[in-house]
Image (tube, rainbow, N blue to C red):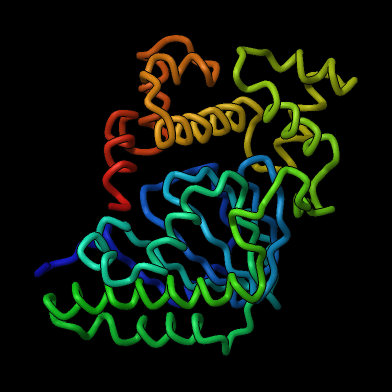
Length: 294
């Protein structure tokens, strides 16, 4: 490999925001590790809400829908280090890093949200990210390609060590695990998220959720938008796309059938919404998932 693109690999150390920004639910093809050096807020992903604070490491699988809300103040700007990597970069290395390859496969195939992990700033993984962030811009193109791959393998290995100490093995997760739900989200918004998680497979209207929660449609829309930064319709669509990604990666169901199973019976509409949300078509996503970990 003689050249590596920003899409394939990027590492931004201590990116700082002093002004509030509104992030929408989004997904991308890269694996993402984001470490928060300073700042507070909440992460909403896959029907769960997690509090964010300094020392939080967030892990996002490829095409995992997520939304980060930050509470900015003069004392606490939002400072984070962000690693983004296309796992296809590591194809040639996997046969030589078997344990890390197996761990990464488990990470990608885990059915539940990956809860954020708390790490001290002097932990080996965070120190390694910051050091390589300083070194990477000075490398020649052929050096950058090789060194980036070795750095990512090292980062995933460090994450495997951390996981063995701080988290239960991925294959031991079950439906009765703690949800990690934070108390900072409005209970009505949380209830609406759970309702959508249970009913996304069928078409529904806002009035259906409002009736179930004994609220007016207007009040529920206002509360949900304030709590999550997005609309109920947009959240439902993100939930459907996330489930479609699961079915595309783990089953051989046809694309029209998958669209139907996630509440979008029109194949053309499903493909249009999927591409807008992920930047790729369902067929391309399936091909990438099948080849990404070989």
